[in-house]
Length: 157
Image (cartoon, rainbow, N blue to C red; front, side, top):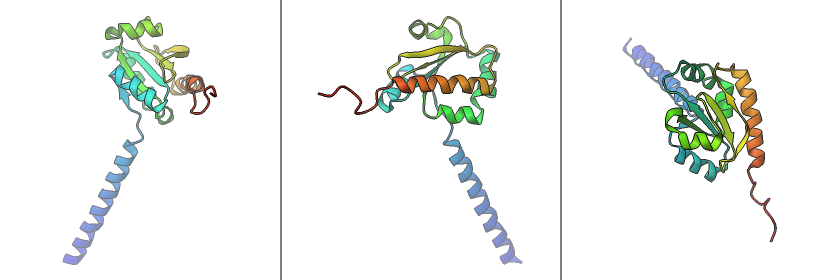
């Protein structure tokens, strides 16, 4: 009986370890949101990634709902993996609001890797459905990627 319980314990340990590894690996596919504008911009420039700016009010219901209902959607998460996502508090981001023409909170803006705005921003109050946001995100990303110079496509000398 003692061997049986050792075997059960070993199997239980293996199963729990495997479940933990799956949990950790699944967490690696979550998009990262930067609250430091400068860091996000440097990363986008280095990696030639489009940037998504999200101007939010930290204490608003719309911000909370946007995070829960839209940004946690699996398809949206997948699309956000290849953008530099920068979350800015509306009240403290005056220079960036002016640069991107944002006049009220709860607005998303897409730029190319150099910070040039593409398309129109998306006002997310009321919170859009995940499919509606995904449509805007894919379109804006396509415009931003088209504006990013690709290696070897510059003028020939």
